[in-house]
Image (cartoon, rainbow, N blue to C red; front, side):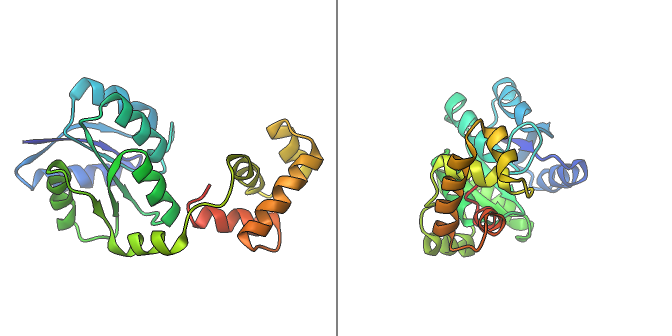
Length: 201
């Protein structure tokens, strides 16, 4: 039996995935969690062969959790299952030890197949997403520019961003100006939204 850990914050989706995987016959879900910070402890306790992670969860996003899980349990094969097919997410996931990136709107039969292929040592990536990631290029934003854009996303003022990040207002303006230019945007909100869509934040 292939032992699977499932991390998905929506209880109904999690239940449906467990039911779906139980039909496979050779797959057993040995742990179910609804938060990112529960993944590593549950994995260390149950020693799954494969971890199936959502990206957006409370207590830690799936990409960050994947990196922590890969460090703690390198033999566990990690798959991301998400509704967010952003090219930047794919690159970050692969850099964090993820071996597969699947979209939730893919046919359900592909999930069990992907788990088997991951365990066999293959990489599994949605073809459309792979093409988008290659054509998108690398993230041009520095870590500090990403922080400033993330803070700008809810529509925060320069003063609010500066206070939140413990920077001067002039420094925030400089970072935003460079980020806006790199994104080819008209203003900080547009730059932040574009970067988020690409999975660069």
